[in-house]
Length: 295
Ligand code: HMG
Ligand code: MG
Image (cartoon, rainbow, N blue to C red; front, side, top):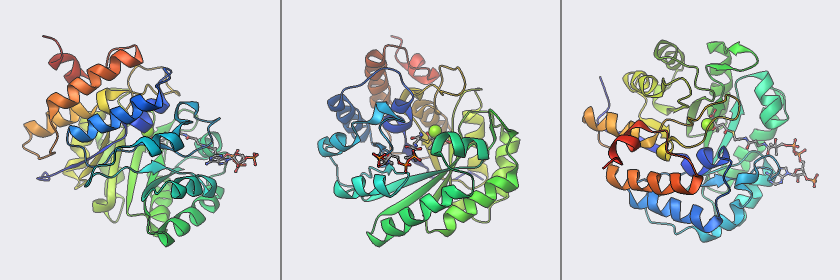
């Protein structure tokens, strides 16, 4: 069966903007986040406390947090890789973070400058200090279906990394299809290999047009938290493609058709993505945004 209710974890301001070449002023980012909250979002990943040289698009993370118009009942998690990032976030009163591990050796080296094993030496103290400070921790695992260098990722390897992250005390594990190569059968097999599907979220990139089908497969496996980005922004830097994450609007359209409650105002989402597309200098790749903004 399908769930009655789904939590949409909005990643546009972080995963979307980190991969867009246009530089967006900090006050516009704050306005974007506020518009997303106004459309009904309850979880909005705001930015990243990573090394600013690695992700210059989000180098304004500290200033953005001081400008956030926090609304009651809305969570604003941020990405944090290490203790340096955690301390920056704690100084700004952050109460929810996300760490991001890799399922493959090559991506661990490229994204974290660590090996598959030594990434845990970086994350363990982060989770411990965060939990000590009453901060909730989500964990991502990237390249869950395949990566550009090693081909398909063995399911056992993803489960080993993922279960270890959950074991640290992370409340949720988001399975990332970073380059969008997954297909529904693979999704079902991967989720089925975990002991606790109710603690999983899915994070699909739509590079190969599979994100919605993959989402439906995940819903059928009992997953109720879906990551998506407004307007589908954020082309993937490792695969020449205009599409980023699964577009929030495409997801909401499908869920609405299935009678699944999201609490989101589709009209407000579409007008926010249309406004943002103008600022980014390219049309939203979301089919639903395109369809609903014509006329
Ligand atoms: P490193 O070079 O090994 O860092 O990078 P280090 O620990 O050796 O430190 C080097 C210098 O950086 C030091 O400065 C640190 O203080 C500074 P120095 O002493 O030389 O003057 N530094 C920092 N400064 C500010 N904030 C920090 C920080 N950390 C160190 N947090 C590191 C290791 C993890 C920092 C680096 O590799 C990094 O920043 N990586 C982030 C990459 C990234 O953001 N990728 C995108 C997000 S992941 C993603 O998008 C996937 C996801 O969407 C899911 C999916 O789709 O699969 C989540
Ligand atoms: Mg991503």
